[in-house]
Length: 197
Image 1 (cartoon, one colour):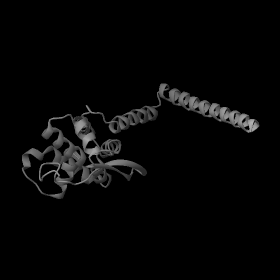
Image 2 (tube, one colour):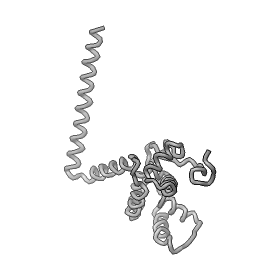
Image 3 (cartoon, rainbow, N blue to C red):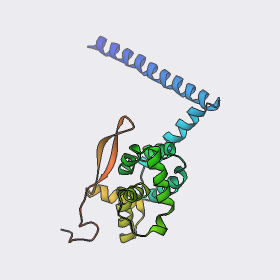
Image 4 (cartoon, one colour):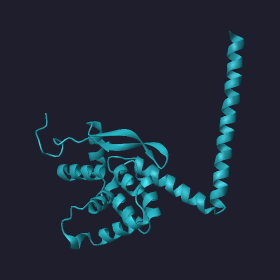
């Protein structure tokens, strides 16, 4: 019994040292590439940090404003828009689905409608619907309604809606990878269209 315990301890210490050594090697390699000015490494690092900020929601988060600011900066090209929506896919999966199927011609039409949206007035066309969904996805929109109605920060409204079951996480395919995304469960009682039970 004592012999087995010593063997297990030795094996555990050896494996632990190998894992720590590998992590340190990966960290050094990543640091070397980052400081060497490898532009792809810098872009990957910034995108990873942006994704982490999107998925980390606290009571005082204001992801609605952050999304809109990022969206306005990302409509310069279809590639930038798609990259932006991949990073925001946790909260904007419906917008990601629309942008993923866009062609360059669709994107030009999208930009034209986005820039002229105030002068057109009400428009029920599918293209205008796509513009509105990408501008403000369903989860962000519903949480903003709750936060304005109850006069609470956006993050607080999101956390409470998730706790009450109005938002759930589902596995979806984003850019070829299976990721967890927030999905709004339709319930009219939350937005004041019925009596809460």
